[in-house]
Length: 138
Image 1: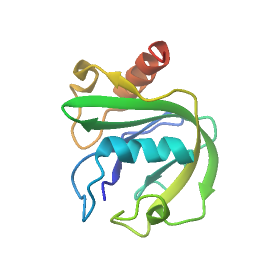
Image 2: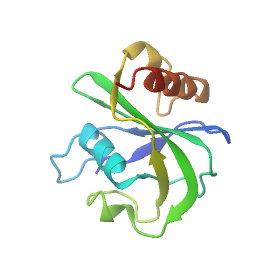
Image 3: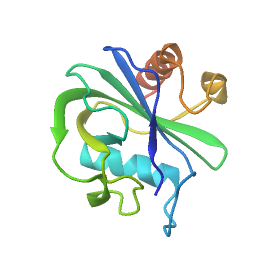
Image 4: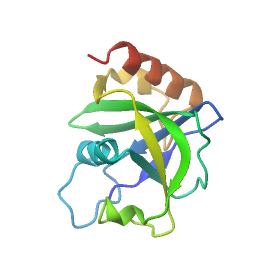
């Protein structure tokens, strides 16, 4: 399954990225994985063990040559289930699922917002993506 990769985080912004790397025995795309998080009010990550309440969360994916993102607010709650409950082919059983209240739908975001994308997106860019999605959530 596609794993989310956590961007650099501070207590105000967190980015979760769905890539096509690591998809095992599934035909789901990163965009579909993004939509699953939106539908269930969650994000998941293997390296972060907490996500403070009030943190602005940007969940994003690249599919079909475009970036897609949604924005929400972390509740501070950990959902006590395996990510595999929502993403059956998730690679790590030890990843943590966090509850998020999404405030936007999925929006296409221009590539220029991801120019600094490596394995993760710098927190300053996560903030800019959040602002773009909030302004263009129609």
